Image 1: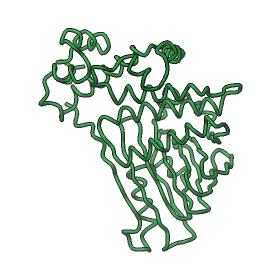
Image 2 (image 1 turned 90 degrees about the vertical axis):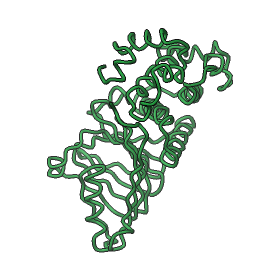
Image 3 (image 1 turned 180 degrees about the vertical axis):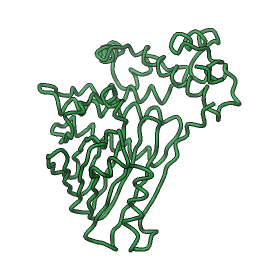
Image 4 (image 1 turned 120 degrees about the vertical axis):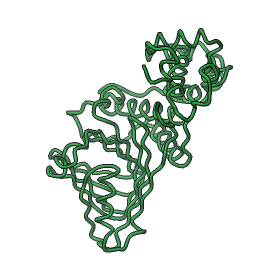
Length: 322
């Protein structure tokens, strides 16, 4: 049976190390927790860096702060410490430059650089910096973010008011999650992060594609749904009231993504139920109690939904047989 899905925040800071060992400590910790690299700094013994992060199954999030420094991941390091991931780095403070595949990209606070972490790169910070780093396996990058791996690195500059507003929503979500993580917010956070990043990447990389302001209604509707899956009153009308749209208009927005509001609600309820059934911390709850908490009104409805979606009964899922 799986362990609890409650997210654990990891933290590290060079200020707890003697000055002469701060760079080596940072390299060791980065290699163990994030990615193999080599750090250099003109500040030498005054080098400062701090990290907090969280692993959310397929997606990892890090908040990294530091003084002037440069990190390098050369061919030898890539070979010794492979990292088949796509990194999305959101610079919130400072100025930087990024070099990969012969391209030099200048970055300012508010810019994002998306790149293949399994290819050599240099990332330098000319001023004290802070960034949010999202780590997603390469195998999921196309599905979750719609990214063309061969086109990387890609810089997101957030040119339009909608881009900027979505970026702000993303930053708030990052800060909230790392500041107060919870099991219930995890699924909502991962879903929203992937959805917003995919939308922003499409806006940057596709000609004649502009984000529609209605995307905010979809973002907030999904957030409301994911945070209220256990409510028996969760339905199309409740979601529409929350975001301030008519039910018909909200349905049109969801249909453009290929599913209805109701289908989205029941898909997410089924996914939550499956997670809860496999979660060791919920072993004290009966199958029916989990079904009820996830919005199912009867055992028959719950069993039918699990079999149709996952090909296994709730009891089989709980025993780890699915």
